[in-house]
Image 1 (cartoon, rainbow, N blue to C red):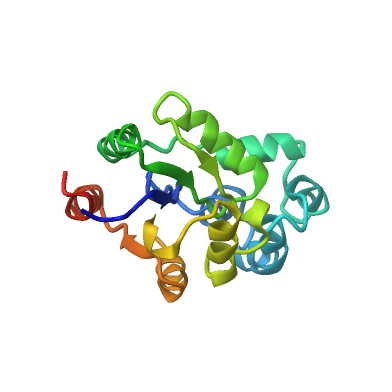
Image 2: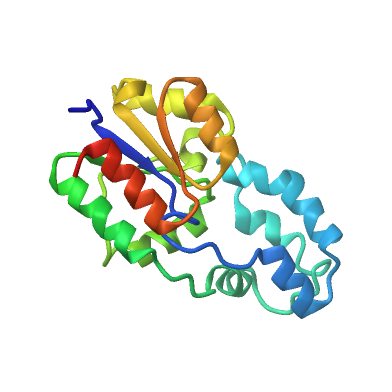
Length: 200
């Protein structure tokens, strides 16, 4: 019997399919070069992901450069409004693990507005115990301090937690401080890996 007490589970790309990148879609539809969008994503967006800046305030300064004719809220609706189907079998299995006393932590690397959208989508599908978003913790998941901060805050031992993530940088970061990890490649593989860990 393993001693796993908790799952740290990514949202975008694990519980939900990962859609087309915003910058690629926006560039195609509005004729703004990806390089111009990358100037924002390479620095300012990281500040939003770690709670050091507000996405709405940062975007308000870019509307003209990005040729956006609406409001910031309308831009966020465009950005976050793409339909992203859930991996329903995986969500269902994680729900069963929670019913068996495994705590479910949503370990998302998103800023607060997009996180709120995902939580609304998730509400009818999965009950969870804690949200540990990077904007709350102050670090991206590629930084081991993100995981050590979460462990300390919730009084968890590293070997009692398994991370499910589709980002190899997050997987390597978590493994470096002793968390068990599952790199999400597809839904059947991830469910199979979980069943091996939990024996059911």
